[in-house]
Length: 415
Image (cartoon, rainbow, N blue to C red; front, top):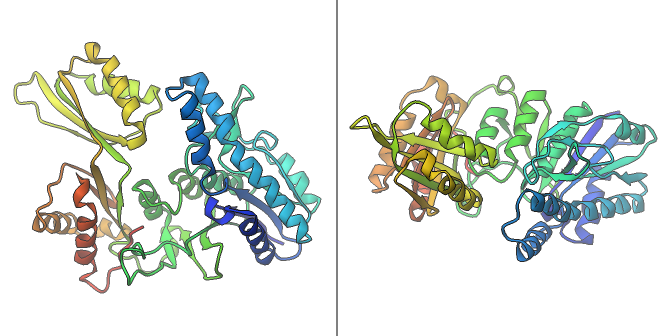
């Protein structure tokens, strides 16, 4: 007997027929006696529709408004969880739905971007031990004050992996409209290949860099708790891609991924006073506003008095970030704030980079040959990222793909 967590995304649940098909996959993939937890997203497009409703009534909602935002947008997953339970019952599988607050999936009180703090397993265990498949809406939880919270876009992946960790599941299958992680976007690169395996670290970098296959926090939890992840298609039975520890891959490709992310926006503070503590004064208010900062570059101060500071945030956070910094201009003492949404981030990812030189040089030389200017650079042990003008995004992606695929012993990962 195995314990399985199966998560289905919105495209897999877009209408009653697809929900029934997804339920059929649950029955197909689980053997008699297996304990099954199904995590569901809202139907495709429903969450965006609810967000539009919220913005139409209160576009500049404050913290109190965010609490109501969560109430509205969390309802999409509630609908699909009930429908999935009904579909499973019609297929002869005893099933029941449990809302996030019933489990409970406990979170902090950061509405719209809540983080999971605890998942007691007692209520779910009781249902599993009665032979029920348990259907749980992804994306939602409950704060300390008893209010509904949501985990941010893509949060259903996080829900599924956190539940798999809490329940010590044997496996967590992420069912979606693609059949795994590809070495290129099949819509752009005709010879794209599906990867059989990718490491947690590589997948974490890819997810943080814009890959839509898995959500970043989901991969973080899987890596921390050793959850076995399997990315699969709802619509066919191919083997998909397994996300595993580095020790489980015999031959480590030099480059496993070339990714680009259009969800970036750049902010530049001009002539910031150059003294100890100024960076903390800038990024502190942004952190308090739950705005994540990504790439950061500070220019060298020529006169020892002022400098320019550039950083990026998610495009959806640009307006709030700009307002937050505008409100602090007097105390921060900078001269002007410039913003730019027309940028894209490209990244080369691979665990093989730890032991090989020349990866960055090849990237920079390739972009230079195409006349593409680099605005910001950031690195980690297994990643090099650059920020460029959005108009050159696809050209740069194709050029880098070709540059790193020159060596047939390397594999190139791009999603």
